[in-house]
Image (tube, rainbow, N blue to C red; front, side, top):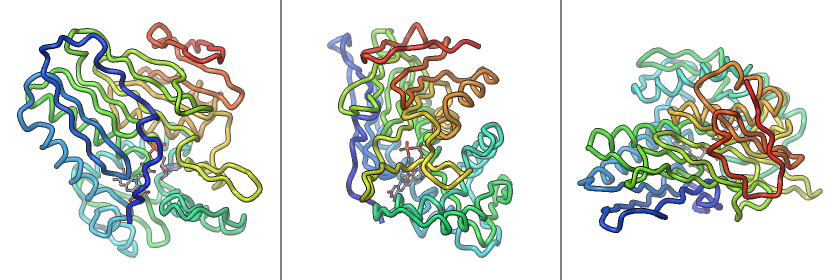
Length: 338
Ligand code: FAD
Ligand code: MG
């Protein structure tokens, strides 16, 4: 069942459009609640019924991908007792990306960590701190290399379950951007609960300005990045979390190495790149990897840039976006170089 509560999705990453728009530019906005988050789709210029079609596509993808919806392909694979189930090209594309980022992050992204996420109560909102023995027992069946899939079928071993929630919103954003482009839209901005994706530039030709939430005061902005034709996806520990009776905070991104909320020095990771799917997969993986491994990971890749915020209140910005990042906080910024 969906949790009706939507925490501060709109505060996570806000596209600050509109400052210097031409007054005569037509603007169409559609708000959608799906995938347990508020989404806002904004297109400029003539867009016909493209945003209605985008909403239909978002709802279709949700039905196909949701681990908690008994009609979804993922549910079917999770409840097939280890038999192969048919899947769509969409699910296959997300699984391919999940495998690739799993491998390049040393298992930091593991879609099979789902039973551990469930044990902490993050799928239902009925939070609890599981016993160490329960965590260890569940971890024995966390192993993405045991999942097998082809272009049209998926097999999840009987003692495992998977969830694509760490990267499916990114895929959804890419799908919507591609539909809008096909419909002739040249300027649009999507906010899918922390995933911002831009099509082209603002109607006046300038870059979109995207606000990054301040992880220690999420109602405020840490800073902004200026982007054109790409995605800016944030994963943080300040939105989906609970505090236990001893006052300890536990958040929803789990380190598959130990089954506990990932606590490797980072409180927020924003990934900027062309593919929303890749950025979403990476934002979760790099959060788990922590500062040093995330920096090493970035140095090996040419397809993304990032803004890291550490639990010691420092900001790291990679050199490829250093000149489009504006710091609005009092935290010091260090530039990571290749
Ligand atoms: P991200 O960092 O992008 O992802 C974190 C999420 O990935 C966690 O919440 C957890 O689910 C999972 N995860 C944690 N650690 C890891 C790891 N190491 N490797 C891989 N995955 C990990 N939420 C509900 O409460 N109810 C719903 O019915 C529901 N339906 C959804 C349906 C769809 C199709 C999608 C895409 C999401 C849905 N969600 C639902 C939200 C989902 O459970 C996640 O909370 C959400 O996608 C997290 O996105 P994020 O950007 O906050 O964080
Ligand atoms: Mg993610």
